Length: 152
Image (cartoon, rainbow, N blue to C red; front, side, top):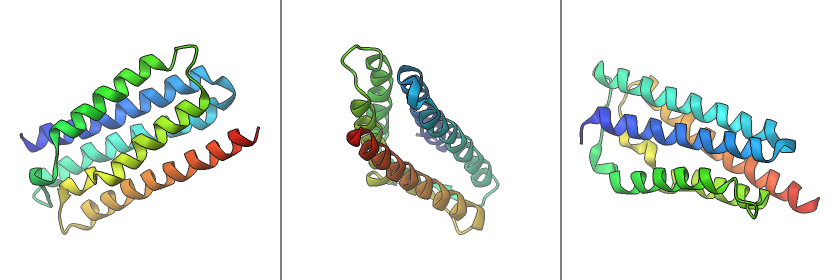
């Protein structure tokens, strides 16, 4: 698989997460600001991933395809796209949305998707660090929201 294809799949994955969060925000209107902020940040992540490709094309890093599981990421992308349709089902609850989103964010960390980028360039390392920090932040915010919703 070409490095451009890997990067594009990672970016599309982030965009799918963004779409999921936007759909959830429209479904649970009282929490729309929470979900829209996450969706916005996911689109920013997609852009950051695509910018990394430019740095790599400039020779400042590489895409290590050995650290990349096309099948895992493709499966996750399909799951997210399927989940977008389930959001509209009458029995889909806010707790379901929070659980699903936490699972997605945690899988990004567990599967180390962003470790596919390798480079000594400060910009490559910074983007990797920022993406990982943002995912950890999303996990924390989703857990906090789940705790608040549980108390209501």
